[in-house]
Image 1 (tube, rainbow over the protein chains, first blue to last red):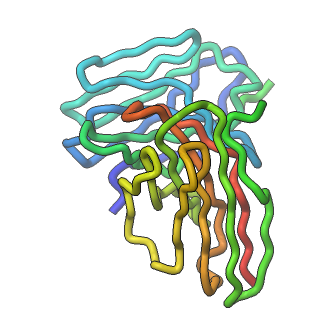
Image 2: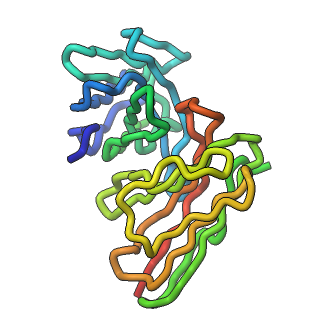
Image 3: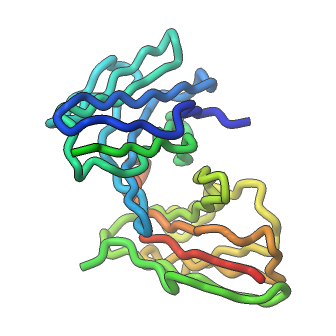
Length: 112
Length: 112
């Protein structure tokens, strides 16, 4: 009963182009969403987040979009750089819970 | 200057043994977590402590017992290890109800 789904296990993009990662959720109680980045043999590191009262949040090259009606969010990375090659996890939580529910991750490979 | 550290990084042991994984954070956070990343790469919450008090206890076999001697430490003890316990275990911390959690590098447990 995965409540957060990342249906694309992998994404390959050319350096300098846009990377778009997608995430869907099923729990309508979720009101806070995060993206984490993970390199091999390391723990996930927080990248960017968005509250359900917003539909967009931007931080440098990273922008997260939230469509509440569709229960969908996406992460845009522009421009993509070789150092962005990693696994990206989408996560969600509801206000009353410290718990994060994670998706399965999307492996991004940025080609030179 | 590691923010969240775990020891050991790798742990290989036989079925039936008892083992512990230690976690320490130097961020001054008051909430700590244990996650399990299984073979399908899903990150699933196991436990969470806030100010040494257990606040999240997911459906985890009672062979797993967390122990928090103080706010900066959350250890995980596992009794009677089974093959299915093989996974990567991540410790994380956060401040209060902030959803941005900081993860340790993970402990890869292999049960043979």
